Image 1 (cartoon, rainbow, N blue to C red):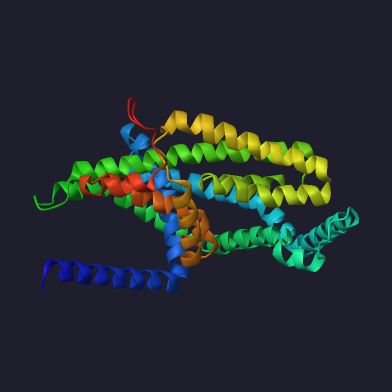
Image 2 (tube, one colour):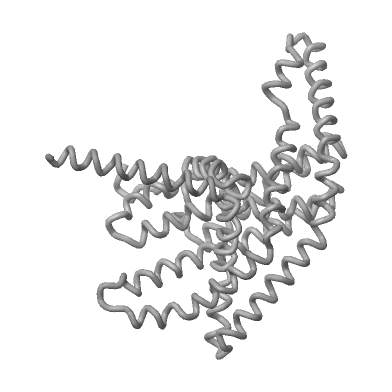
Length: 346
């Protein structure tokens, strides 16, 4: 077998293995999603765990304190947002009907202005109520995943305990083990990225909550939570988070307040995405817009609604893993954002 045949067969085997793995992930999505959420939470908590251990707090006590903080945060979110989520889900069909009525009135107005528009055809093509339905499905999927709260918290505890024991295990490995320094650099870059992203997302969520509450839009805490979660999806996430809140403001308060609500999302996106985030992370950190969109569709298809929330974190971990190896750095560069050419080069 010549080199070309070997390369072709290797590519076919790799493609077949990829299809099998993805099919298995899709079939086991109900089991995978809680574990992925737990891993995501554990990664965010790792810097706090290191901070406590470096201040002579025992590993067991540090894990216990972090677990209590996670449970307390979850209870607070459930207390403040749970009723809003249930109320919004209950009223979702009426919101969709009112949106269809508003769209129909707008189309009739266009027809009165001399523009021949088929109302039913336009409603089939451009249906804003579908955006409200998508928001409902996303929140319902997250609620279903969080129904396994006990499993998620228990997994986080075991992951954090394992993280404290891993350095000792690595020291006992032989020379054939992977480089400890390379692994530590990879973990540090992942933790740094997600820690900064979490704080920026939290600031975005708080700002959106206050902005919408001042305007008078219903369920501001719920839309703040959505903004916090979707801020992990750069560029596209802020648009997806804004659409249902703006549509609700249009239904509830009118066009003027809907524009004000949209202005709040624009301010948050411009300030956080273009000013604050590049300052803390650097302009070269992140993913290209195309990769963000593809990962959103792909992971949403594989893991369901929660996969859309985890799409960029999962893809970002893959990118950071590729960056840690010199042989695969070129793939990480392709996945990353646009790079400004060096001076003197066109």
